Image (cartoon, rainbow, N blue to C red):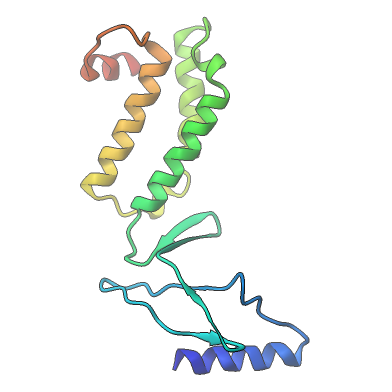
Length: 154
């Protein structure tokens, strides 16, 4: 059935002098029991993928957000490290905290309103939060409990 729809799409595209780029086209089945599906275009089977980025969000075959959350955290860490001198400088601590909340957290939480959080996802976000605050507030040689770091970050 899906192959028939793809064939019709190819036929309609050719009518308008358009072609599907087989090298760039991927297939993903979103299901609780994901299994590969076979779709061919011009005698080439399309690659089955487990996740891909669409309109800035990571979609996965099981419909979970863990992949998206890890991707966002990686982008936010990269942004933090790019401006590390600013966040760890001698600027007023409150100003540095506000910069982190504004700049870093907006990157990390972009699209969060569509996420369905599980306990593991929440732990990833909490670990990232601790990673940020420890770098902003505390020297790496200090031994400070997480609870104290969170109290200072407020």
